[in-house]
Image (cartoon, rainbow, N blue to C red; front, side):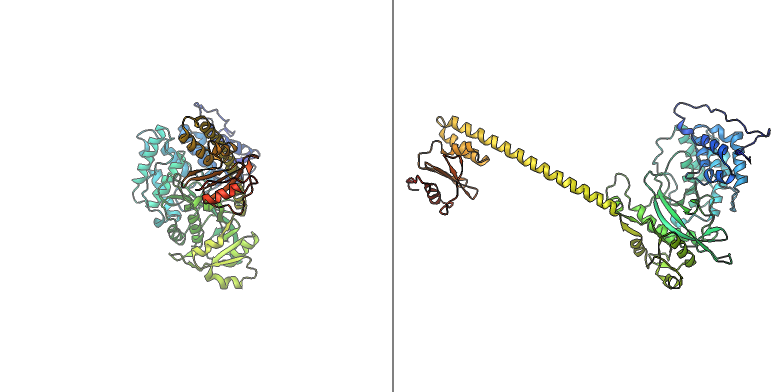
Length: 560
């Protein structure tokens, strides 16, 4: 494949681009074959090979990975066709893998996809390619045995939607991965994740955790705490560490095989930092990570040194606060209102516990954070380096991971304001609903009181004792006009009605005095309303008689 005026295109031996051939599309497969048409459009409209490589190999997700995965699922024949071979050769020639592994980033998804697309019983023919992939991952230096506890089998999550053919092929490929001789357990784990992704199992849809970080770049390569080979010293650059849960994969902390397969770490300091950070994970889940530089949104070529350990620890603490589906907890609610500051970067190495140790190349990192307008959290051991820096910017010091976590967090005031507003609206609505419910209950009680008073009037002649109880019940249900009038029915004037411990009533020609529930009420029989309470009123029958007799038409009361 070569690059022409119309963009890079694969050229067959005849020298002209091969025309696009329509694929046979089974029903419902149009959406499953979107990657290859997108790749052909990109090749036809690109102006430089670099722009193609950026999308095909360095995208999110890389377009080449999507093409290989789609082919393994719905069109296995494409993987062994001439078009696939031409694209592979051109990509390898344009963006050669700079690592020392035997398998490059272009061949990584292709070899696994061919193994997934193999017919029943033919997976073993792809063992050399699978073994080469495990060896390549071990040489990259991005894996840590302490951060990959196993077991290295998929959890089963997300596998229900696979076709029977693909499920059987995936099971066979995973068995061959486990049987790879001489390969480390972590390498088998990341290869298991890659096979699951190519089979169509996607990471969890929940939003990823992102932690801002700073690097020291030397000789055009983004590194972390690497020895400065540039006479002018390392240059600082900002980036982002992204962590995402992958429930289908084995427990552990693994690089995202789609975007990190071209990154190298030449020493064991970075891998050791992963092991120290994994101790803060708590629950054993499958977590994928990737690092992208802010100036290009692509992964660095190399990662060296331990200073990403703090960023991994904070990101894992944040990610593990999210409870799994179906498991209630306050972690998700807490993260909703208090989360990591997007404009705060962290750098620091772990000593195997929660304490932070000194890091190098801090001056370049301070400059990068200041240019990016970021607050930087650094270990307390680097305080003297910050004091010597010409323009340190906004810096916070931390001795432990817990202190760094406090500096890197903030309350999300916007969300809090919205939540408080919703609570206020809900409280107002609840108050209105309670008020309306109270009015309805009172109306129902008034209607019931009138009904009881009417029943008492009907039974007053035939069953006077029952009528008396109904009159008392009517008043106790609600003090309506009908209830007060019912109390005077059948009483010789002046007279009393007594229900010990419940109700006492004294009736005169003008007033009706009632004591119930510890309250004394005077009712004007002529005006059908409450009258003013005289000072002589009390709760005793004598007080009731005096209250009722304090009207202008005072009557004689019989002795109690």
